[in-house]
Amino acid sequence: MKKFFYLSALSLGMMCSITACSDDDTTTIDAKNLDYTAENASSWGNYMRVVAQLLVNDATALYDDWAVKYNEGGSYADFFKNQDALTSVEQLIDGCVDIANEVGTAKIGDPYDLFIHNNEEKALYAVESWYSWHSREDYRNNIYSIRNAYYGTRTGAISELSLSKAVAAVNANLDTEVKKAIDDAAAAIWAIPSPFRNNINSPEAVSAMEACATLEGVLKGSLKSCIEGIDKTVLAEVVKNYVDVVVLPTYSDLKAGNQALFDAVETFRTSPSNANFKACATAWLAARTPWETSEAFLFGPVADKGLDPNMDSWPLDQDGIVQILTSGNYSDLNWDGDYDEEDDKIAGAQALRGYHFGIFDLQRWRSPYHSVRFLLVRNQILRKQWDNEYSVVSATSALKR
View 1 (spheres, rainbow, N blue to C red):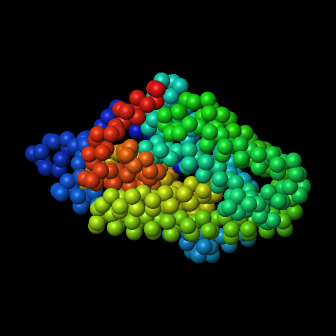
View 2: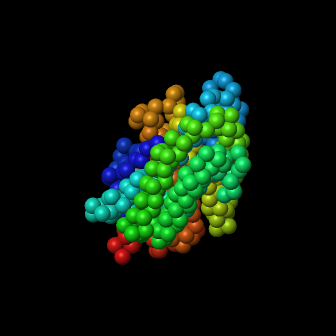
View 3: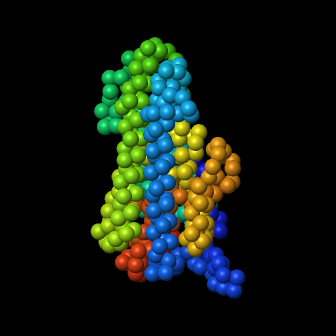
């Protein structure tokens, strides 16, 4: 389960400050108004490049752990396919249960609870992907990750070697119930008026939470019980298909997408222009999608090695980001040793990197990208648009309409 770093110090203007490095200079720097200038251009570009490279490193490590070698042994794919088939299918289902719960109770539920208790500003900041106008897409893709795991494909078709077919052979009504619960959850999320950040307490958001809860209940109740009665040779084929057709291709796409994102960032960094900026946005979306459709299988290497929070912690440490921009100490983004989710030093590093590396939005573009947003919005071509057209004040006001 990923950690959510709620930043209680965020004020209405999302202000944070640091002290300049000079002993004699006590000038504070406001994160929102830290302009992209000739003097600090290299810092913005360097940070952008470092974060994109870390995403490449993490996605490559994740794919290699599954496909090549894991912890000095064989691949995790081989381990998963060769262990007790019932155990593997139980892990498959548990992964689906976890993300159904997270979408309903955390991604939608946490902002909703804050909002109805008159914490509207905190509710806004608790919305994952709020500044990219892409929350609903991300949440629906999370449900699609469950669909992919159950259907044994990534296309919405149902494989003959899927868990769905295995369940249907022994309990057709249950298979129909599971498929309906998946479809209902995805549809309920999509029915939330866009953007979610302006409709946190809408009736549709409540319906989406209820649909996710129903899906979670079916998965961890009836489905979990059903698989105990399925022949293990059938389950073994389900596991093999799941790994080969769903997991490995998804992680392969993630690896390729993150590399393409890095390449786009590098091009923009060296040749800033509107066209190259949009290319970064497009590359972010392409890289982000396989991640969201992988969240039903956040077990194994992605959990054991902290790769999930490396790539997808939210919200971020805005003050820490500004400090690094000023100091140039990019080593603060790294951590060493065995992963421990309770280690504050590791969590602190993870809150400075990943897909959600951004706090601000670009109202003009309305494009679904927020990976390197914190840096991209500083491009001087677009800075005036940001200042004139969008602020957190306007976003918070929109919640009240």
